[in-house]
Length: 358
Image: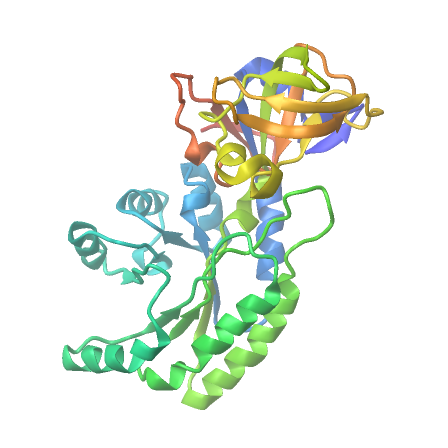
């Protein structure tokens, strides 16, 4: 997304042109941004062997998965449906990892049938249980080949991932069959228009030293894996929404739009003041002088269905287009249409300018 002629553009297309052609609400993904995000992360890790597993749950659209396959990425899935989507996009089972929780025997049997590594957990296992786990594995002839850690979501502190990796590294000598260490995902994406970004370069440098020491200790190379989701796709997506009305309230101004909980759930689920905060721009005159503070109300009767609160924007009028940023992850995949709304269109703008309707 760029600003040209004082209007928001996506490649060669301006926001109003796309809104007229495909309607609103409209999810827009840009392949060029996905490419840049992937390369930024990949280039931060000098250690080899190294593999990025894209977290499919962030955005499972077929064309998005095909892009990551073209990059040479692997994928991480959470369910049989995501597994089928990955296979349909052309991923070999050797490129698929499974991270899930409270799994049914039916689903586990499916993963085993496809010969996938299973790392079912509810925040993993206790370190004190490792000796027993190794003993049971030896008893039943099971090879423990991978260690996987998971911290949480939207974590900006690099030191926490380093500490987790150090903890996992201490377990490597206990596992004679280990071939990979996976530090999971949860890398933070800045929610506001500041310049704070997750420092992958610092993480990559620390992990290079750590993994080289760990590999020397067992006399063979241990593969390093990560499972980013939002950091690979969030900033590649924008949601266009049409202003339906502007209403003066008691001491504040509400802007109504045709988006809402059933179209974009993150502000409602995660809190529009917290992790559910998303920058919002006016598609026309995005750099114009701020006229006032607006609260962006959505189109359901849920009291807290708010897209953004107290946002400084140029004068907003009925029929304007709002651009909600950083919605490429956990946006369209969480749509429900509640209450009875039509699901939004989604388009992918390829690097050459071709538009693919998803």
